[in-house]
Amino acid sequence: MRLTILGIVLFILSCAPKRDRIVVPVVNSDFYSKALIRIDDDLEDDEDNLKLVEQKLYYCDLLGWPGTCISALDELKRQKGMTPLLLDQYITYYSQHEQYQSLLDIIDRWSPQFDLEEEYRREKILGLVKSSRRDETYEYLRVYMADRNEADDYRFAANSYLALNDSIMSSFYMNKLSELVPDDQLVLNVFPYLLFDLSFEEKAFEMLERKSMADPTNYTFHSDLADKYENTGRFSSARRKLQNFLEIDSVIYRVTDLYLKEDYWDSAHRVMNILIDRDSLNRDAWFKKATMYEERGWLSYSLNYYDHVVYLNPNDSIALERAELVRQKIAYLQRLKFEENLLPPPVLKSKRLINNE
Image 1: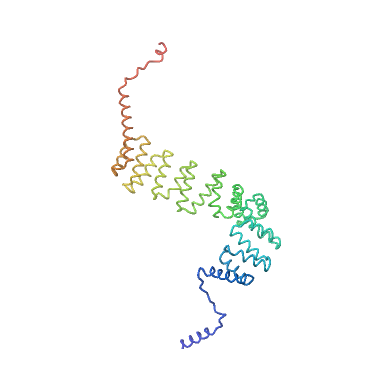
Image 2: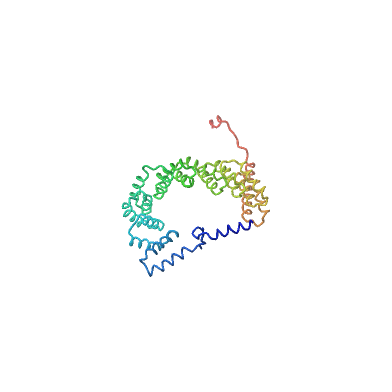
């Protein structure tokens, strides 16, 4: 019985009109490109065929307006005249192909005809920016932003002024954007560095810290931020940015040097020992420790560590040279001490006797 009912259902479905069926065609990645080539071939024999021109524009749109599509735009304009839709396609084409003078010309010529000046204001500003027409750009930006206060408007203005190399105005709108969208990528990735250029270090570091908290495992970013702190003399902040990455050998050396810059010898020594405990055969770690003791003036300890590096690799010419230099320093200091002991003690006279003489 169940099989009979199932058979009836399948029979009814098979008799359904074809137009009611949903068919999902399988399209190869180059389907549209090949279709465009075929249409171009057909247009060579029938260039006034409006249907072919419209098909070409359809595939041009799907393919992101390749360079060959301008001919179809011009042909459709010749046959049917300019329309708002065709104007939009022209603007899209010129923008994508960075033909900014043509973009400005067609906006100026046709947008007033269709009362679309406001709709294409951004495209015109972009064309003016890219054409280096600064005075006009500033005027259009001023008018455009007069009564706008949305995040997307602030982002557009900030990018436009940035393209004009106007850090002050770009920062002004980035600050407004940051108030609406604190985690906007433009705010996080560009705004702090503009603030550094404008000498607003505290605000810049505040924003970079916000980004660091949002992305605590990004070593490249934290390392760059540590560089910023170090370059401004904020060594403790630089160390703090690197503390979570001590599993990286190069970070151990950086943190050690940061401690040494503030003469925190014990802390620097402790951090270097982390590297040696991790790998007792690490030549660079022992060499670094030797140089630390040498620079501090503790030459006997330094010589022991240089000798240990030579023990690890008897052919280490740099360690051999450094060890010999330290031996010479020790010998020189010992000779000075010996000669000092041979000198007779000075005869001290009272001030009164000296004056009488």
